[in-house]
Length: 253
Length: 258
Image (tube, one colour):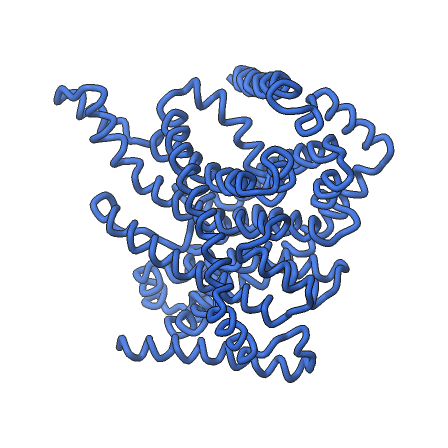
């Protein structure tokens, strides 16, 4: 069963690589879309020269710091926002406004504020993740079934234990989904800020490769982004599956 | 009751602008934090000289073209993936990989492939919109309850009937969610593409103001982006609520799955 699945996945991957191979040099110039084999070779070269690790660690550090920071702030603000109707109305206008400004557009502002150092990158990733977390947490908290809260009240629960034992578990599935979506936004944020102002990182690698006319680096960057994203998403999904089993009967896939 | 809510919303918006205003004095560097009145002035000025219209029109045209192409192909591909297992098995793994490559990262490749003019912008927007639409459509089409299909077959429906009367209505809420998420992605894509290579558009306006040290214009651009986003999201939500009210009771509009 599992073996068959692996077989099907590798077959489909082979097919994609085959199409890529065939189109490179025929439909697209090799200077724009290089052959898969050359990209592989470049990948290995960059591992050997340790260059790859410089970019990976730089992006990874920025993402972890910004993601943790942004999710924490978003969680707290989202709970405040979801808690009562008044707080929701108070926080809605600014958040509605900011959610429509993509992280990419904030890059120049961040550069003016923080310069091109690390602080700006942390801020940008926090910005990209905070908004998603606020919206999901608030939706989860305010979607707590009234009947559960009333039942707890009838049984003599105080505010604090209602929050901890009723509201939080009810909001949990929404919060976990928020964490997953926020991770995707963190990747967008990091690529944008590294493309526009950085000396290392995956986004820098991609942007740099057009500037120095080296198409191989760009595709190495794509492979890194795709693989990295897939890996973190699957890990997060597995962790969520473990954590959430208690609280959600059915949350879809 | 309604007035009370509205006044809270208005108060909050006013407080937001107030905090912004005060922070310009605390920060004491209007070159970095531009006070709201200056931003308003800039907005008024570029509205009068027609610059604003030019940029908004350029971005809007790109978003519309790219979004429509992305939606058509995305719904088509998503339907095929949802209907046929072979298609799902062949296309799903590479798509799962590609979805992690953010549209921003695609910009340089799009420029290499399609040049600096409109082609590369359309390509970036098509790329940003097509992925969420494929995943949502495939999820909706593939998730059609079997019992509905069987019921229709018992009543003698043909293949086409089943598709148009059972599968499409069942998948509709998912497709609509995908369309909404994709709109946000389209805006992100157009801004990214314009910031890196364009000579008009809102993204270009923001980036150029930074390079030319015109902070008021940069803030005006960002403000504009926020307003356009709110406006189009409201519009599409209104339209989609109309379109889908037949098929589902409520649309929880804040939470989406990408």
